[in-house]
Structures are given as C-alpha cells and as structure tokens.
Length: 288
Image (cartoon, rainbow, N blue to C red; front, side, top):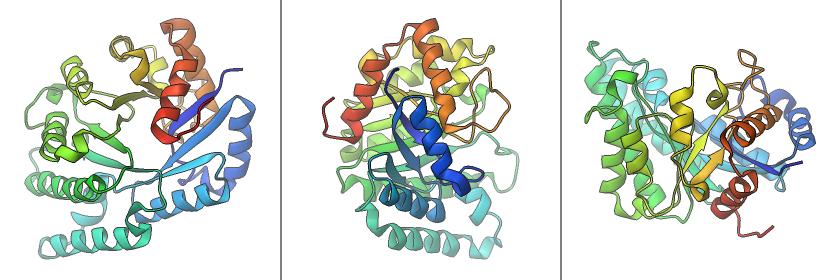
C-alpha cells in the first residue's frame, strides 16, 4: 500500500466535520498517513487548529481567509460598512488564530474571480477587497516560517489576462519578497501552461492536483501535471469537493484520494513515493 499525504482537506467543513473520526479511520485504511486541514475563514481555521490538537499524528492545520470571504461577508453589507467589516474580519481572525503560532501553514489565501460578474457595479470593490485581504495575510505570513497555500481561480478566457486572478496573484507574491522565497503551494492547480511555468520559478514552490485530474474532460489538466517536476508535485482531496472518478458527483470522502493516487500512478507514471516525500519536505522535518 502506498503512503499518501493529503495536502489539502476540509474535515472542518460539513458534511465531514460531524463524523471526522470515522472519515479519518477510512482514510487511514487506504494508506493516508497525514492530512492538512485547511481553513477558509475564522471559524474553519479555528476548527483546523482543534483537529490538529485532537489528532496531532494525523492532522496538520492551515489557517487563512479564502477570497470568497469578500463576496460572502463583505459585499453583502451596505457599501458604507464594507471597509469596516473587512477590518473587523481581519482583526478577529488574527486574534482567534494567534497569528498562526499554532498552525502548520497559512492559507488558503489568494484570488478568485471565477464566479464574479465583471459587469457588476460591485466588480471594482470585489477586486480591491480581495487584494486587500490577500495583502494583509501576506504581510503576516512573511514574518513566519510557515508555508503558504494559495487558492487562485478565474474563467478560462482570463487565464493569461494581466488583470485576471492568476497574474495579479503573481504580482502580489513578487511584491512581498520574503513570501516569494518561502514554501508555496499552488493548491488544486488550474491556469495556463505559462502560469504554471511562472509559478515554478519560485525556488520552493509546489503544485498540487486534486480528484478533477481524473475527469474524462481533464486532458489539459493532465498535460499540465506532466510538466511539473517530480520533486514539486503534490496530491490532495480538497474534500468534500471534487470527488475523483469513479466517485465523481458524490461528496468527496477523504479516502477517495486513493483513486486519484492510483490514477496518476498508473495512467500518468507519477512516483507516489516521491510525492509523499515532497509533502514531508514541506510540512515536517521527519525522514521516512
């Protein structure tokens, strides 16, 4: 049985969080040794820390504010209240997670314009506030030794748009020089071949793929995976999202990562032992 390190999971989200011990046991039964539980807001970040406290030999924690916080919590407020609400969210987040001192990573943080209406009156503020949320977290992360987990997504016709999510993220990383030299994970990779090449220019960057790499329609994604150096490749579930074939369409169970691992090994020639070592190199000092 191959050892598997799930570098991005959400045991802190429904429907997994209520029965997380059962899901953990199922994941262990198929070879999962460790799993990073990733926060998306204050509540789920605190939950990630709690899970890593309960099961320190299995869970690691990442704390962060996902860019969707802007559309879900800030832009839903009256315009006159939005900046104050954003400041409150950042302040409360930092207080609750104690500036990441107990976490194993920062994230997920980044930019997401995938569902945004670029014709909407709120579009300029959505971009500005997502950038403000990202920059605030990058400043904090720059002062720690923790790796960063990036979420970045945009529509297919904006993959190489200089003002799209992918290239704005690159500019923000470059602007925070101490961040650019840290361990960086581009989670659930999407984007163009050009973006992939640029992401790999960072000295300690890694690229992670989830269950969607097994989809029949994902030929382009598989071609991108093939271009990632073996020592930079990671695997994840992103559970409860993106169930791989043959479970596509179901809630993604943490144990389903075994299907993704078997697929990339048999169909794409991925060395799973190398992928496991890559994950250890980011999150632990242990040698196996």
